[in-house]
Length: 331
Image (tube, rainbow, N blue to C red; front, side, top):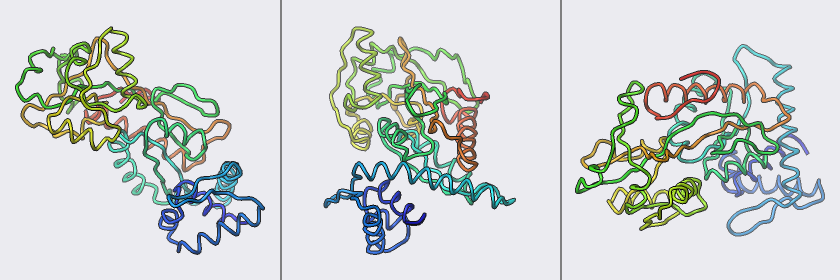
């Protein structure tokens, strides 16, 4: 057993498929399969349950995954200490981010890292907020942006960004626009940030809504607000697929509730396209930056964390992201 076989094992577990892992590692699938079988033989235990849809780790596989990540991290730290160069940190960092936020934030982050720190290789897990948290708890990621989660056992968690939530959709007859109030901000709060009208939650709840199911954090927040206000939601379409929901509200089938980070996915300044901040109560969504507890982030991880914070501050300051930075410093 060597470090390469452990890297291969980690790649297979995180990909959930031998073929996908082989593609990411640029090795032939038969060679990768042979490496995994050799590792299982050396350890005397089965590491994966195999099926036609992919592979899932056994209990032994999950234990090895945690131990292997620690071992590889320690090896990387040792190599960094012994081979410090003026070229900056080197290593691999896995970042887990909710998919709606990933579409806004990660492009600029990855582009900047490629330019400023080409020796750092970043892997991305973009998934539902619940799965992002699971990736951190399972130690499959080095950095995670958790939604409305201020404390998790085994993780160091600190506030990152807070954003509002908005009612979005096509108001073909202009009937909804007549119900909206003026922005409480009274003007452009940040350079480039559009002034948004407001809509009371009770009015938004009565409109035809296109929402995901209750297992999603946005729907949970909307349901909690409806219960607090004492109104019922008029949900006309419920689908878990973000693509299906987007196609529905862009087709005029109803309105949706969107966090600020996802507003850029709308059709832009088209006639009758409505975006209004939800108030009374205001719906807020807080991101927390998480890292594994009990282990100081290595140099590469620290660089990625800093770039995430820098890009978030920059987007907020420019108005691209209607949010509030909660980390160390003001946007």
